[in-house]
Image (cartoon, rainbow, N blue to C red; front, side, top):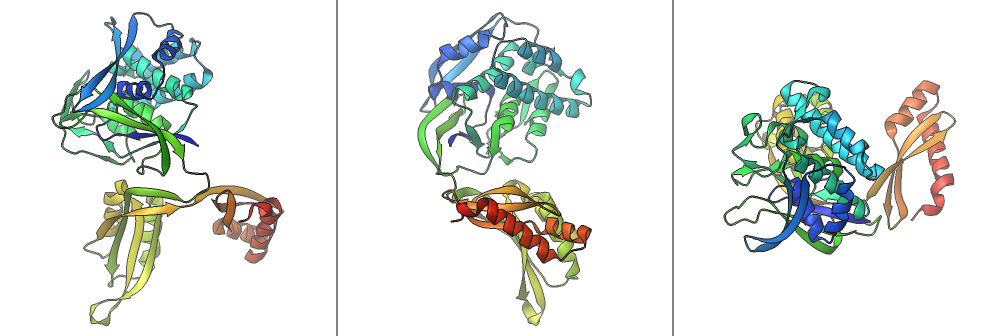
Length: 398
């Protein structure tokens, strides 16, 4: 599987994405020809090699004589729909702009229809976002992954005045994603960069196991003392489909010991944590000091959920302290197959290695629901699902 990995150690912007694509071999003449189909006048695109703190990177620039950059989402959509670019590029670009319009509408207390794009409505932003999807199509629409996102810090001047970094609309787009600041002053993630990245990326869990074929560096506009303001994109292939996938860093183990709480509450807390989105949560009986019986409550979770998970533990349990540490994970390729039996449909969780099924499990809650609704034993539902699954996929068992 072809993939692109976005290493956002110095943030991300639309021009940095296109600079990286050009550095990876995306032809500037192809980009120019495709952007001409937008039927927008008064702009020209250029690229050049620059040195960023010792790294050679490609700088992508849009030169425009435009003075008024205020456009509604509907106007941008009209420009795209009336163009002759491919349907896929139209749809994906509209999707990115719509996500941005939703974010702007929320932070400014208005509707998508009434949102005025200021800087993002300018020709250069339209070129950056559309160009990113033109590039992705040229690369064969690869799967995209990204690192945690360095947002910078401080204040940024924009059309609405002086705002905190990340800018409100950018922050809205990045909700739920792993972000951080390494004390670099200024805005490192722009709205255009956030709109593209959050539309195309499937994961922000660190570098996947991949065979790197080529690396591209796209230069940003900032000069940062001792740190290259570049976006690094690695192009390559994901490890053989079905193999064990290693996920490095960005995962924590969070745990706490509890010996003075009604154990019935544990079930409620586990439900709250799973709803939050932790990977796993479990309890083990432990013997505390003075021979008191207690539980060790442990969970595996993405880094960005640390504060929220800790808050649940402090609010819902009697613990007065937690501990956490980084870990790596190995996971199998997993997917869900819907299996139809005479009583209804049951999802079955399937795991593969090297294209062979090595584990499958009917979802308990669905089997339970069918058993209760049809007044039949649970094990009959489970047996029927297993039998049907074996009839369909038995040849693929490892």
